[in-house]
Image (tube, rainbow, N blue to C red; front, side):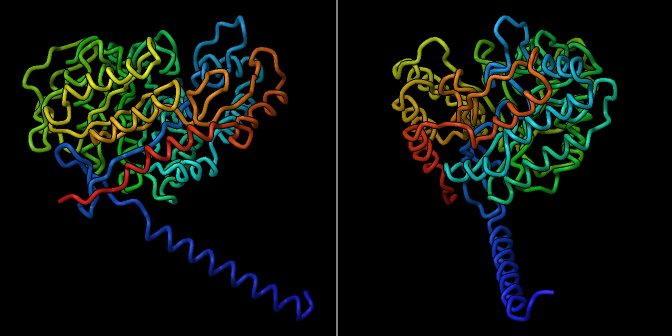
Length: 437
């Protein structure tokens, strides 16, 4: 037992800590995110204020895009997240492979990273995830606690900082295109095989059930870059089915709908929303793997946001990027479709003048945006706000070597560009909530 004098000061110290904890807890309660809802071309909260979502993607955290993390040893044919999982399991067994992935995930994003987002002035984080964090192919519909823990971690840390999060299914069962960004290069079976659609619907029902009462979740981003959809009707039909399944559980959250890319007409393929409502098209062609009777009688869409991604990989100059954005602005998608617009991914690589121009254009048009991305390898250039210098060799490094390298994906070991940080903060300042008159 402590001497009386030490015991006295120990009790004082513990009381101070208790009241500080209470103060912080109350502060978080009073600043907890308010529910969001769409109102024609705007997103509003329960106070009737217009909320402009300004944020960043946590890319390569829950779905590893190997070019971003330098996971591709020279001369290897590794292309995607699935390749990494297969190689680690073959080399070390499933249990140790799982441990390594968890070390990577827990290092790549931790509490500090949510603090960093808050300091940048952002009010939103898009959380891209691979379906495999929630289910294995040999146990479809059986959802893993470890996966829920990761999503819960993201949601709770956003909520504690009065930040919204968008839950983004970045890689679906079966794959929504053949691109590596789905987590499984070359697959593209979602729009062609019924079983993968069924699994996607079931997964979204489970996600919705879990987060239906969580206002920190801005909404559900149903399918990232569904570029493998053969026609707009095939995409609209699957969206309709997902919408119906979600709305049977949750009518509060926004649903984000991404387009098939500018080469297919982008958001011009999507219908007009009438007074915040979207009548389902009366006729939709019967594409492979879908059934019209699942769309019939669905009613009207409500509380949705249309999403597109803006990239120009050909020209990094200010002039080319300005034309890209000006051309999109001229289409007046929000006005014509009567819907809020989210630029879910973009990257104005180049000098800071390009970044400044992007933010000025986006904010002047009242577009919601989440830039790509929060962190990447320094070898990927300025794609990430924070840049790592880790070079794991998945094919040769020992378990201990990989474990040690994976811990160095923490932002503690990353570098950043102060001038770029200042530009980002300036762009985010224009995201202050405006009063809706």
